[in-house]
Image 1 (cartoon, rainbow, N blue to C red):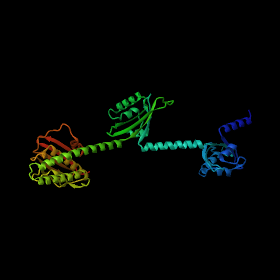
Image 2 (image 1 turned 120 degrees about the vertical axis):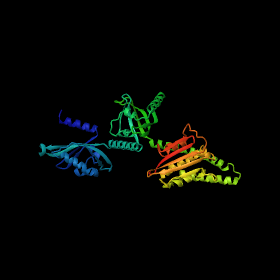
Image 3 (image 1 turned 90 degrees about the horizontal axis):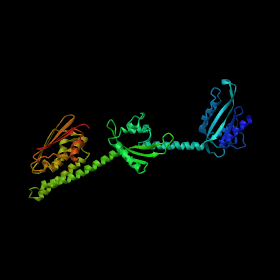
Image 4 (image 1 turned 180 degrees about the vertical axis):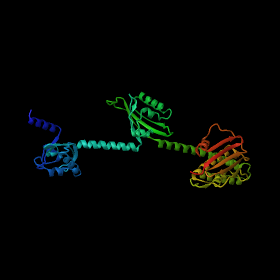
Length: 452
């Protein structure tokens, strides 16, 4: 086999690969372009190609880079052979195409004393490949942005090895450092009690029905006490050579949604509780106002006055305008509906104290709840009942006491309803409210911090 055979084989291979061939004579700055190379650049098939023509079809933004690549290739100390991508603007249509160039310089002389005489290489139109790659990059970027915006983590489980493919997003959602090596057992350790078993039961039931997808929510409890709610979506995935039995899915943080649902349920429960209490209180006020009264006009005026006072007290409880409030003034508004013209059941004593907005809201809610219960079941439900309200203050907090006497015998409730639960746990925090059911009357002590 001779040189002609080698050339022939190269030509066949270049044609099969749709490669253009170029040969740059560095002494004359004249290029040899094969027919395919001319076609890629949009040159006339019969024209002789010069350096200026090649430069003219090179995209202006790529001039500097391609020039540097050529300089490094013909430098006798470097003799680089690195392929490079760039854009050409076709000479005939002005269309921009992406090309991949491979080149190697031919030198006369050895080592640093040699000089390049020719620069020979191939040219391949890779526009379709480049566009496909860019589309994939953009698609992956969109997916990444969607995952980040949705606080999602993509995961894959090898069912045969019971192993999960970790990721920084998954680690973050489950409370691990982003770069920590996390196993499936580590993930399971964050499940709240009973959640792992429930999810497995749901998955087994779906598999029995021939389903390959699952969607469920579950609760996490981290070692530091953090509670998280996650939405899990998963499906059985086609096998690969390395993972024949796998599941792919996403986790989505829905903690904010769950907390909003809880808050809505709490508000709905509170509204129901307050409407029910309001009706009971109005009924009790009517009984008090009309009991043993012969002058119905006077009784009606007393009843309507108490209803108006109840409306003002209710507005106070729900208002946000009591920032930096005087405790006595606030208290008088709350108890006003329950005072009778002929009998004042309240004794109030304590120093002047200003309350912050947070403290005023908590105290008004607590006193309103105590008045409501007293008028339904306690000291305010009978004419001879009495309530002592007193308080003392320090620089940090106010200690307020509500003490009933003279009412019906106190019965300790078997279950804490919404009002008692709110009073003892929801207003001022754990330990801040002490409620006791003495046989002589209910006693409640509130410890109210003066600073927010």
